[in-house]
Image (cartoon, rainbow, N blue to C red; front, side, top):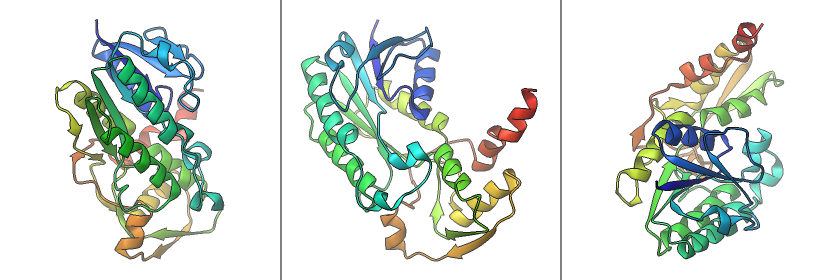
Amino acid sequence: MALTLVTGGTGHLGRDIVDRLVRDGRHVRVFARSPGTRSDVEWASGDLATGAGLREALHDVDTVINAATYSPIARRGGIRPTDFFTSPSAVDVEGTGRLLSSCGEARVRHFLHVSIVGLDEATLPYARVKLAGERLVRASALSWSLVRAMPFYYLLDRLLSGLAWLPVWPVPTTLFNPVDTSDVADHVVACAFDGMRGERAEIGGPEDLELVSLARRYQDARRLHRKILPMNLSDAKARGMGFVVSHGVRGRLSWTDWLQRNDPVARSATQR
């Protein structure tokens, strides 16, 4: 049976990818620093940042789905001044390079890399790091695919929750279409096994909404009452900050429906 290795398989997107693969009856191995608890996959311990465990993890692997990334903003759920000047590259650049090299040695048949929509004009350091990793994939002699996705709902939720203490929220008016990780996982898994290669259709959410509208829907769903101060951004500045609209495949789950499904108050009530 063909074996699929998923890097980043314990992250939000990675978990959904693993779920889809298992549901489809595929043999899955997850590469992670610490083995998880689920018993329907194989676990391979290692670290892309150092290369530890890669050779063993790729043994008998046919397909690699690289969903690993290291975003300080996503991990802490907020932006700090340092994020405008630097972002770690050990996973997304050096780690991607190590993984590509090891895949070549292991004769992996297909390498699928998950990236972000709008990197070419984005100026934030994390975006530049992601673009550098992409370029390594594009230059690789491997048989590769590249899927760019819009930012995820869970990250937008985390960032907006960090504003809850402010009485006034300054929010850009630019359009945006974030997406749920479950929809991205469906698209990624389809692209991994449909026989096509190269740059694939990017994926975003089903609605093009102004960030002001996204913030208002968040406040309504979380029962918050904060004044929103709309801020106009030029198109160039918006693109530089990663605020774009994807024109590829569209996910199905809306922002409003995602907020309802992930309401911490409702979840707490059902668990009593």
